[in-house]
Every structure is written in structure tokens, then in C-alpha cells.
Image (cartoon, rainbow, N blue to C red; front, side, top):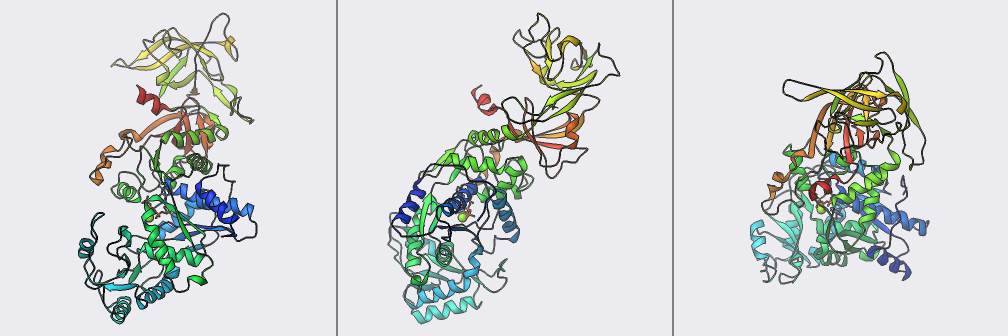
Length: 572
Ligand code: ATP
Ligand code: MG
């Protein structure tokens, strides 16, 4: 396996402790993990945590155990043809690769449908499984509760021959969906409800994206997963905490397989805490609802926590890997603050994104004492002093400029260090200007500012005057018009409301997307390539949108603001 970048250094966690002790005790001489997504949606940042863990372990232990066969598989858990699709498989592969990982083998649970069927027949023959003909609702009502034992199915004592015959006929398509199921014969009074004769197979007369019409019965996750792990020789089968109760069933399936002794190793399941993030939603069901209900533009909408959305938003794979490393691997569920993810992208882009000038809400400035025909090409460094990189471009300066509307105030308080009537401010890389007059429209809005510049102030402070503020600007004549999409958190509440499922829709942050048109970018950005990232000075980090940006008509997405503006707004 290879990775485009080494995994960030991390402290040991309980999974690594388990692996280390397995290696020390010679229980294993290699580490084989898998990432097992169901191809029924796109991956989200929670999956990234699992990807970094599974692929990261294989990378780490391959370094320690060269030539041992240590590896990580990508396995599609494709046991439900109703919701699954090749389109999602393609998206998932793209996302895993983009995160910087490569699998040592692409597998499908459906690769093993034949074996799973054989094992099921074996379970029936050994009296460990039976065909049950109760309806879904009846099965549910027989299951009991956490405090009350369930009731045996009237079909539980069906003869082996009858069950075998029915199971074969289920496979041959003689029955319709829901008429029969195959169940493990375990214990309807088991304290663990997962062990109360769980379903192993159900009828689904639906074509499968990999196996077509070959099958009309499909194995359940709890049956398919341990078998797939065993066949692939997975040593450490890592999943999220919700599957803690399924572990007993996982072990039951493994222990009751006919040729368990022939498997390369006996896999064990370990559970870790899933990633939860505030101000967003993370379950595929809810993401699907947002996409299908057209609340967002698609799976790659930059408001979504999907990998595709984060990528389009402008997040880097390095920032997501660093975030996953910073979250760590623990056994207790918790919610991580979105600010932690935002910190990671700022931290990464600080070293990577050239600084440029862009005015998002333009206000025209005329410098009355600057000659109309003149243009000065000013040298502007792409990097601040604390980033050890070199490179600069020329920014043109002339008589008419744009500044940010927010950098001007008609009645400014004393400690306002930007532009106001009678006040002086420095223009980044350029002169100091003083506001001498304003032009207003019929309703009293300021539409233009009149200024004078001091030719002595280029690159140095004016004699005897302190100019505290520096603002950004672009030359009006050279500016490139652009659309800028300001993205913010998906939800305006920390946690989506519990209770009725779709209610989280009401918590969508109305300002999660603000589209600005007629923004004025510095000349050099006319050349920005889709996917290029910049820091717009004093504004934040932005990326030229990969889908919509064009050379002469750039479209930029705000990746993240420069400071944690959310925390400040909340405090107010
Ligand atoms: P969701 O619950 O978000 O709808 P899922 O669990 O159904 O997702 P799968 O495709 O089954 O999605 O997940 C593939 C792997 O990713 C599983 O091993 C699962 O445990 C892991 N995973 C899913 N969500 C998270 C999360 N939030 N944090 C960490 N791992 C996750
Ligand atoms: Mg799942």
C-alpha cells in the first residue's frame, strides 16, 4: 500500500495497544484491516476517521513489519441491492484516493455470496439455523424487550430437511419478498437482543449492481461481515461503538463456520467511538434527505460534511488527516467542535495559500490628486514574513480603486482605524490616502469616496503622523469581476433537534451560503485555475470552484474565515 503523504504522528491508542500486544504474544505476525463502506451514499468526515485509522494502521505496521503481508482492504459491504449503486462505489473510491490512501485489494461482500450460501446450508444441517415464515411484524413482536425475553417462533422446530428445502427454494425464487427468512437458532431469551434468533438471509427480488439477477436472497450485515473478514484474513476488524452488541453475534458466526480452521486467521471485532461534529449532520440517511430534498446542490455541496463537499469547499486531504489525528481514537462517544476542523484547514493553508487582494463588497475610491493616465506596478509578496516562501507579483495602482464597504464609515468613532471623512489609512503595499469627501445617492447611501494620496508615504510612514490601519484594495481599471460564495456552517444549532426525524431541516443555517456577485479581484486572479487556493487578505481562505470557475469569470468559494469568527459572534 502507498500513500501520497505520511500519516501525521500520533500517540498510541487502545487499538494500537491491542495490536502491539497481539504481535508481542505472537497471536498475529501481520496486521490486516479493512474499510467496509456500504455503497449507498457518499463518504463523510466520520468515514474519514475510519479510513485514516484502518489505512493508517496498515501503513504504520507495514513499516514495522516489512514483507509480512500487512495491508488494508477496501471492501464494499454490498448486501442490500435496494439502496446500493455503482455510482456510489466510484465516489467512495475517488474519496479514499483523494484522502491519500490506496487499498491493497478491492473486494465486495458479494464476491462471497456463494460461500455464504454454502455456510448457511451448513448451519441449517447442523441445526443452527432455520427457515422462519413469520412476517416482519410478527418477528418483531416475538423479539421481546430489553427486560422481557422473546418468544420462540412456531417455525423454530421445523425439521432440518424442511428448512433446507425451503432455503433452496428461497434461492430459486419460488417465494416473494418477506415470505420466509433464514434465522440463526440461538436463544430467544438471550440478554443481548442481537442474539435472539437473528435474521441471516432475506428474500429481495431486486437486481444487484454486481451480481445482477443471480441472487434473490441476500445475507444480512451481521452474517456477511464476519464471513468476509474471515475469508480475507482480516486480523483486526474495527468498527464503531454502535456495533458493540453485534460482537457476540460476529463471534457466533465465526465460531460456527464449517472450515473456520482453514481461514488464515480468526478475526476479532473492536469498537471505537464514531466521530460526531456539531453544527452539521453526519448520517447518510440525513445527508440523503438534504440531497434528495434539494436543500443542497448535491453530494458535493460545500456546506455538507461529505468528503466530496469538503473537497469542493477547498479543504485539503492533509487538513482532514491532521484533524482525524487530532481527534484520536477513543472508546467513549463525544462531539467534536467544528472549530477544531476549521483550525486544521487554517493551519494547513497558512503555509500553502498565497496572499492576494480581493474586494468582496466594493466601494469606489477616487484619488483626486493622482494623475488620470498613470499606472504604477507595485511589488506585492505572496507570502507574509513568517512563511518561509518566496514569490511576488505586480499589482497595478491607479487613480480609481475599490475598497471594502466595511472599511469605510461615515460617522466613525475615535478608535476606528480604517477610512472615514478626514481620516487617513494605508493601502496595502501602497500609499496612505485621506478621505476628503463622499458622494451619496438619492437615498443617502455613500456610492463613492473622494481622497487624496500622499506621494511621500510609499513604503514608509508619513512625517509626524501615525497611520494605524491598513486596508486592502484593487485597481478599478484592472479588477477582475468574480462571483464569491461565502460558506458557513450547515446548521445554526449545535445539535440537530432530536425528535421527529426531518426536523433538522428547520435548523439549516440560512446564511450557510451567501452568493456575492460583482466582487473585484486583483488582476493576477484572472489566471486562477479551478482548484487553486488563496488567502484573500483580511477575509479568509478561498478556492476557485472546480465546477463553475472560468478563466475570465472566476467563481471562488470561501473555505474558512481567517479567525474563529463564529466563536466571536456567539459571544456577542
Ligand atoms: P452512517 O451511520 O453515517 O449512515 P454507516 O455506518 O451506515 O454511515 P458505512 O458505509 O456502513 O456507513 O460505514 C463504513 C465504515 O465507516 C464503518 O466501519 C463505520 O463504522 C465507519 N463509520 C461510519 N460513520 C462513522 C463515524 N461517524 N465515525 C467513524 N467511523 C464511521
Ligand atoms: Mg453502516
